[in-house]
Each structure stands twice: as structure tokens, then as C-alpha cells.
Length: 327
Image (cartoon, rainbow, N blue to C red; front, side):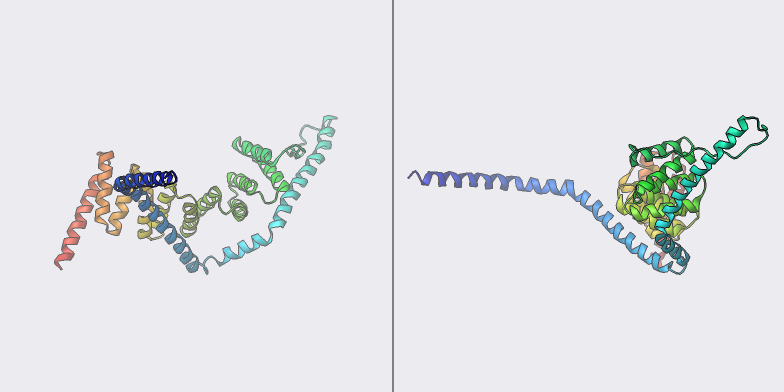
């Protein structure tokens, strides 16, 4: 008799659990559909865009293989000369140290009566790394010097960091920043490429390479860099908007439409992105999306200067569609 009671209690508990779950199941289903479906849809869009971005990148690389052959050779040369480049930087530091020491006797001689008209070339001293100085210390010193406009001190700090660790991408990125601040764009690009090789997932390095490509109006190369960036950092609306602008310059309005749609999904109340979405939707013939974009702009800023023009162009789309239907 007593052995049956525990079994009875277990069965009773299971029955209660089944009844509770059965009653709550419809609510749980509704909750799942209402709260998760939109998120899943956005995630699906991102995955589709990422796949298309990778595919476009492969197609562009295939199309541009012959055009970019010299760049490919240069990159191969850069890879082959990695250690040589680091040695060159180290030699420059040593050379500057020697020049500093050579300039000291000249200053001493001048103090003993040399004419004031004699102006021997004097180099700014390059600090040596102390035993307790870490790579992080060197990098901070370099960034601080660069912010203060002291490119020479910044360059020396980043070179010391490279000497300490030849595979620290941050040091190469900082050195690239120095060259870019001095308008030495070829040297900056070469150094950023080293950094990118060492840290291919670094979005900041990718963005700097993309901006250098923009400066040279190499739209397809910039697109490839920004596509890498959005795959790594898919919540950056600015990257998607920049991609949309680049796709338009490269004559790819459909890809621009996909990119700006992602930007609007991330920042649905950004007037600039909504303006781009409406414009590009009209270009690709998506009347419904163009109307949505214009309506969103009207709700945020009824005085937006392009609203009237958008309204007329969307109406023209409707007339054109009707004309096609009659034919």
C-alpha cells in the first residue's frame, strides 16, 4: 500500500505539468511568432546580403584580375619582403641615432666660438625603449605624439613597437597613420596591407584601406573592403550606406538597393538613409518601397526639400506602369 503512494504522487505531478503546458502552449506560440519572427527576418536579410557580398567580391576579383595584375605583383612583393621591411625600419632608427650623436660635437664646437651663421643639421633625438616599457606603452606614446602633431616621435614609437614584436598589427596600423598624416599615401597603404595581413578581422584597418581606395576613385576595390567590413561588423549602418553610394558609382543600382535597405533596417529614422532608399527604389523601379521611404520621411520631416520631387517621380512610375499594362 505505502509503495503505491509515491508512484501515485509522481503521476499526479506529471499530470499537473501536462495540463499547465497545454494551457500555456498557444500563448507561448504567439509570443514566439510576435517577438522573434521580425528578428529572424532581419537576420535572414543579413545572411542573404553577406552571401551576395561574398559572391560579388569573387566575381569582381575575377573581372578585375587582368586590370589589377600589377597590384597583385606588388602584393606578392610586399609579402616576400616582410622581414626586409622591418629591418629597414630598424636601420632607419639606428641611422637617426647616429646622426644625433654626430650633431653633438658640432653644437659643442659652435659654443666655443664658431660663427652663428653656421647652421649644422640637427636631428630630433629618437628615444630608446626602456627595459620596463611595454608594447602598449610604446603604442600609447605613438598615438599621443600623433595626436599632438609630432609625426617623428610617433614614427619612432611605432617602429620600436615593431622591433619588439614584428607581428603586432597595431604597431603597423599606427605607423600607417603616421604616413597618412604626412600625405605619404603609398607608404601608408603598404603599411596598412602589412597590418591587414596580420589582423584580417580588424575593421579599422579595412576601413582605412577602403578610404585610401576611395581617394584614388577605385570604387570596386573600395567595395571589396567595405563588404569585408560589413560581414565582420554587420550592425554598422554607415558601412552599408557607404556601400550603397559606391555601388551607384560602380553602376550597380540593384546592389545599392540591397545595401541601403540594410542601413534603413538598422537606423529606420535616419533621414539621409531614407532619402537614399527612396531615390534608389525609384531607380530600380520598386514603387512600393519608394512610397514607404517617402512616407517615412514625411512622418519625420514634412518639410524635407526632396519630398515634392519624390512624390512626382513616384506618380510618374505609376503612369509608366499603367502605360506598359495597356500595351
